[in-house]
Length: 138
Image (cartoon, rainbow, N blue to C red; front, side, top):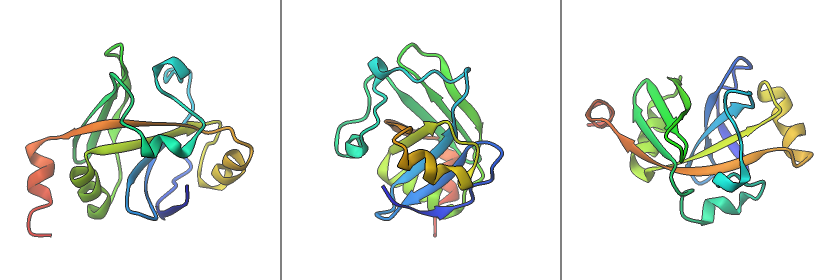
């Protein structure tokens, strides 16, 4: 997977777009965000070619994004500082790639990926009317 655009703030999650314009959310690993293989997490970038992980869901309404796991618990819930292009890609594709692992920012993402320590998961995304309205005319 080649990440091509984004902010990589070094202090939390950040949005990116892949070369083919798929929305990605990079989220540093945390104890409060469990990563369980039996819930669909994989180290294989082939997750992009499969159906989204069963039971996962995301609700997007700029600037916020909430991701829930199969047990209904919130896995991620906070604002995402993303440009219009990222929100448009999220709304259009209706699938989000989550990437997590032991990185803290953009500078240690590549070494973590090269070491095979990233976990990936795709989730379907539902958008609110506010997000749909924000993209009109653009």
